[in-house]
Amino acid sequence: MARTRFMTLERHIIEGERKHPGATGELSALLSDLAIAAKVISLEVNKAGLVDILGFTGNQNVHGESVKKLDIFAHDVLIRAMDHGGHLCVMASEEEEDIIHIPPKHRLGKYVLLFDPLDGSSNIDANVSIGTIFSIYKRISPDGTPGILDDCLQPGLKIEAAGYIVYGSSTVLTYTTGHGHGVHVFTLDPSIGEFLLSHENIEIPEKGKIYSINEGNYKYWHPGLKKFIKYLQEEDKASSRPYSSRYIGSMVADVHRTLLYGGIFMYPADSRSPNGKLRLMYECAPTAFLIEEAGGRAIDGKRNILDIIPSSLHQRTPVFMGSKVDVDMVEHFLSHENHTNVEKEIF
Ligand code: AHG
Ligand code: MN
Ligand code: MN
Image 1 (cartoon, rainbow, N blue to C red):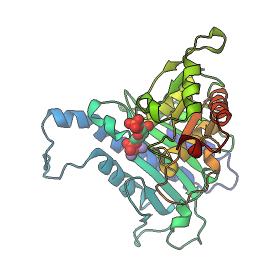
Image 2: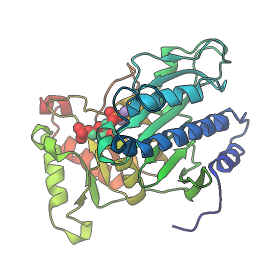
Image 3: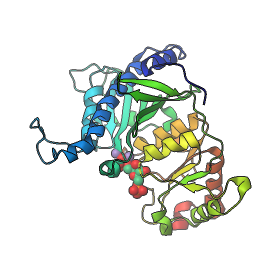
């Protein structure tokens, strides 16, 4: 990958805004506010292990505040950072049952923000990469009124901007505003507190040699999926098989690796979870938007993730996303076995 220019996230966003005729700067301000929230969460995430070691856990920390679970902390930081900028009419979080209204004292804007404040929570105590996933839509209800549920239940195709932050060995922010403007990755330089451009206009390899899935669920899978995984494990140099298996268990980290290296990330439906585990609005639609903008594909087994019309805030969906050739292959294996629809076949 060519060396990138010295570019901060803020400058990149503003330059990107100039490519959108009629841009008002609101989306840029939103993305910049999100980056500030990401820095605050990153600080806390990196301290979390230390907090345990220093024994500050328990009900009180040194400041007499209750020690919040990291995902509730991230949820609170995002709301506090985003609710007064005047750019949003409503928010929704994976950690909150209902939509989150903008306090009446703040100006209402034309955008909607959805987020998974902390993805990969089960990995926190093991110091494994975790992250935040977000997507931004334009409101569909009348300007100047409080946002409503319908503003939050839009298909992924309507996304205006999407991205994620991975809190790992370094803190990395990936975002896109779609429409061919590309997917870009920034790495936080903690010494200056700036996200600096590290990968510009990422294109996912057309075909990979890594597959990512929780194989512990093998016995519950669709027969076609079992055949697909066995196919990937056969030896055939021409098609880079056997593929390597990589599964971190934090979607945001598995998707980031897939975006950079290629291959396929999967969380399928199975006989115990007919709609899979991952949430359409908070995890699958935003990451599908990024993967497709980078030249990959994202399906639920039959349909494009971005075409799915949501019916509820927390609905789950099976997901297969990554390099186009690999997703085409799994689609074939699923439909090949598929004289009826996937659910009927499995259950
Ligand atoms: P979250 O922590 O936001 O609930 O997300 C966890 C998700 C996702 O990050 C990951 O891909 C998946 O859970 C892993 O699930 P399994 O442990 O069942 O494989
Ligand atoms: Mn998640
Ligand atoms: Mn989460």
